[in-house]
Length: 148
Image (cartoon, rainbow, N blue to C red; front, side, top):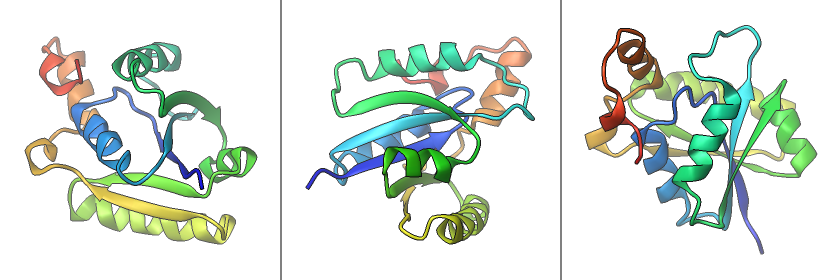
């Protein structure tokens, strides 16, 4: 049986922490779709199209990973694609509390869904897209926080 999972997020930008979660999830799933949610209520630092190109470049040699974008609810995207597994990365207990609530709401909206939590490698737990964006917006070098 082919097990496909979605790894949704804004990925603004896609960090080493995100990369770590994807690579570890490949031990569980046959295919992973990195899905960039387009939220019109949020102002992005990097355009979705640029993020998609950069993430595709990171995984260009891995045929098990694809990158797509979507609008509206993640569960609606999953239903459309007939995907029942969602991957979420956790850095700390704050992430867990938030993601637990979201996963419970998603389960109500899409009862077939299973959310799989992967705890980020401890050496990468301090990296967040928000902090990386702040460094970038203030002229700092963010290369060390992004996959090569």
